[in-house]
Image (cartoon, rainbow, N blue to C red; front, top):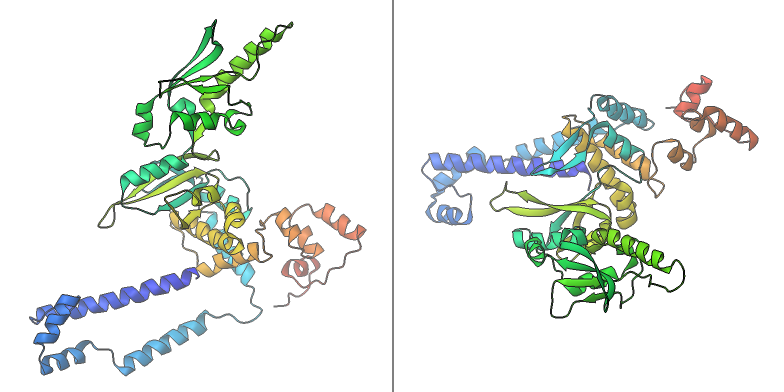
Length: 424
């Protein structure tokens, strides 16, 4: 559904609700039940008299004339909103979006209810969307929870998503040199911190995470290199992969390997997604009950959607390219329209939704997201003069001449270049 459909539904619901409130208020003034819920409606039907019912119908019931006038007015507005075939809708949409965009500032704004979470808006955000940037400054994934009214459940789900390193949950890392056990790094885990963060994590889980080279900066450890201390649920012994050799220089290599392992251990990811930076619980107390959701800063939309406790069908991201890879081109088109409308709306700028839809269609009509820059336009396979009018004019003209390309001169840019009449 497009943006206008949602606005129309909201307007109709508001109109019906206001009309019902007027009728209920008038009934209350006349000493009758309000009849705006099941209980009062049953009471009104039980106590209503025929003459009272007729008088209220005469006052508030829509007649056939009202219905015909409403339908006719909708038909007139529909015809007025239509454009003639050949209208330069692209130029109008470009002007309608580009001119208000010059009034935006270069600011970052806070998320409502989350003081520590910022999101880039203004001209930099518009530039990221239009250029279809693969890397954006503040990627945010908005997640709805299966149990949105339980704060404890929200914290548990947050712990499953947020990247937690070994240094966040450990008390110390010590180098130990023993004659019998050899050289190793002793790691003591802070179980109290794990309990406060409500992480579903044990010492054995940490051991399994350390055996994955991706979590340990590429250092490969065997199962014998990482051991849990017996009778202790909070201690690990980690040995470097390089073993001390009797040959010349073997001791130095072992020492360097030990120091590299000690530097990499605090950064080892033991819980959460490596592609995320952090997760924040968003608290919405506008309704009758406090509702919780999770805002994830980083990438990895597909991994977040598959996390237990997350409603995958209500998970959104502000990164257009990632949405295209995970959900497809239609979802990417929808994201483009929502992000541009939100960015301009945050600055108090109102742009008709049809202009934004035109931009979304132009960027996605070939089945992939193409930015409005020289790379995206060249992949749209437009005419040679159209490409030359954007950037790198001489290079594109020479290339078109070398390949003997012809131009039908049917677009607006081509006609302006040659001084021809624009066919509209």
